[in-house]
Image (cartoon, rainbow, N blue to C red):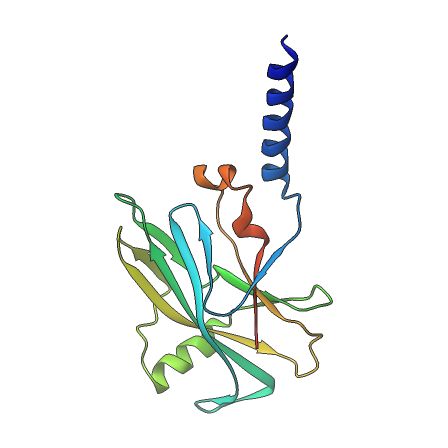
Length: 168
């Protein structure tokens, strides 16, 4: 095999392996920056700690995250749920969205909560995610997203799984 061709194949294989195994460091972006997942953009518009939601009082603090999903696909709808995002603190502990708190927040100020969302092509939808966190959670705390592997993710090294949104 031609040495140039061999080098090109090796570079391509290395890129593919890095993408599939998640090698490379995590990217950290600020609130307002988007995470690209193929044709879909995930954006934390705001994040605010609160001590109470309706009649529910936080033992630590509730972090309310205004989260938007934009579908830039030409033909494909994007299905997602409230489990799309999670928080991770500096020690690696994970915090999941609390659907019960999310529903309580929707009752006190409706934001069109749904158990599942289907975002049509060329549109966006938003929700409010609620995380119950101890006050002493090691900082920094970052939001990350999950999702299935799509064709565009291979081309960018599955970057969406390694991008963190730094919480205030």
